[in-house]
Length: 429
Image 1 (cartoon, rainbow, N blue to C red):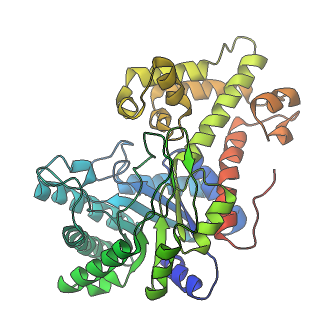
Image 2 (cartoon, rainbow, N blue to C red):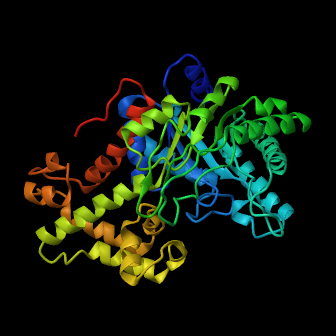
Image 3 (cartoon, rainbow, N blue to C red):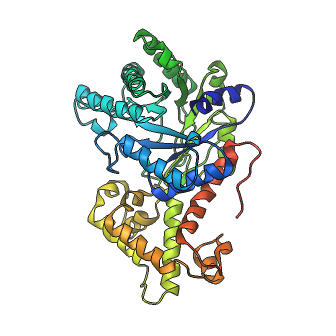
């Protein structure tokens, strides 16, 4: 499947506006929706895990890279999605989870993590060594970043070869929005300066060659840059093609590369299509998918509250509030304001930090109770219109709640599909 990544730059050179969506989520319903969509449309699906989410120590999901692949593959079998349609990627692979340690200790952990990703069979690796470790500047210069990235690339190649996998494709570059979105309201985001992007590429190319792994640089398929997109807790900065025009033009001189755009969540169809047209061929999406999943869960929670005797008054939302209050580490430093304002953000922020809590036992129990309450029921059209806009086609027939959840996630995936596959349109409904 790596030829899909290799061909992105070829398509751009030929004037074909072709891209691929990077689904960055470990939520089983999101994964199921992505795999079902890929099977139905007979297109490749790129699924990525991040360094904090999945690593050799388990990450916050408790999964090592091989565990994550096993989870996705089990769901793929359920969905009859062929394995040759799935590309696995690792995002921000570097010392970030251990940056509180001295550099060599942090890099030793990063090497183990990258080796685990490559040995498991991840074929697209974003090498991100831009962050300083203990005693270093917060952001490192391109030379140090490139040297550390090359070190990890060599480790990845060795691990892949030892495991019998094809050599991985790499993504370099680090000028990205904060993971999960910004914590404050943004009026605008300045795209990466073309000179900075050119320098990042040139320095990485030179360092890889100096370190004797020029062949690894030949497998660099994309560069992460900031195209001028972002979302905060409550607003979205939409792509402006004119602002990124000079940045886009540097790809003319780099025929083997495309750009990778992070935090493209909530952009919508027209901006996403413009990003692909301008060479941002890899579109990463994550929080939007779990945000719309939460929308659907809360909509069903309201429907059950109105429809099912004894269900209670929004017990799912109440459970999630209790779970988040009991373990505030994932949201407290990101949400500011009065108690009413932070309460709103806990549930409805676009950064969707509630996504960290769906695997808590109490949350799983509450979702299970909701599912049991509505399974096989006929949902009245007026309640769907009130609490689940756009879902009228589910009215008056026995439902499986998971079908509604997958439908809602798929609506977002279809917008990306239309942007990355010319000539397609989001499916209706």
